[in-house]
Amino acid sequence: DTGVSQDPRHKITKRGQNVTFRCDPISEHNRLYWYRQTLGQGPEFLTYFQNEAQLEKSRLLSDRFSAERPKGSFSTLEIQRTEQGDSAMYLCASSLRDRGLWDYGYTFGSGTRLTVV
Amino acid sequence: GQNIDQPTEMTATEGAIVQINCTYQTSGFNGLFWYQQHAGEAPTFLSYNVLDGLEEKGRFSSFLSRSKGYSYLLLKELQMKDSASYLCAVRDSVDNAGNMLTFGGGTRLMVKP
Image (tube, rainbow over all chains, first blue to last red; front, top):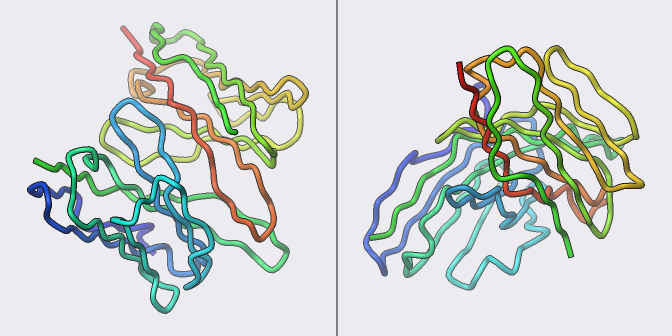
């Protein structure tokens, strides 16, 4: 397994356009998270999936943002009608929660850097 | 609410020791993590504390005091490659509500020759 993969690595888009990012987690991981990080700040939680179910969404996730994880494998994050304030690094992470309810912690992907011009 | 504080920047000399502090006020607590993040790269896991005390892993050690809401990351024998941001993060739940981490703003460490 090559870890958590994110695609694309970089995306430049014009304001008002829609963009979609993809995350492929570690194959045996059942939990998947999306975070957003702006320059000089720590990552901020956006949303989280356990298998295919989206269990938590941050208030940061406006109605222009939508995330899916069909079949509990890869996930997509779509931003509609992008704004300049959406410019950030979008990080995906995955983790494994076992039957004993223990979670072994995150593995992050390298992120997708979005620039809205 | 959740509040995690750490210094914005620190500078240290190659070969020296540096301590990066983190204080937190969170609604729950189920562990504190330290991550290292080089510019433009993903955060990578360094350490995890859930009980009070010191966890040592090679040149890196992390300390936790739950009663004080305080942790520190200690880096010994600093190397130039240790120049990076260090992120403190708290996990505040253990049940089906999730495993979300709340991150501090990060401490940018610059190691000078």
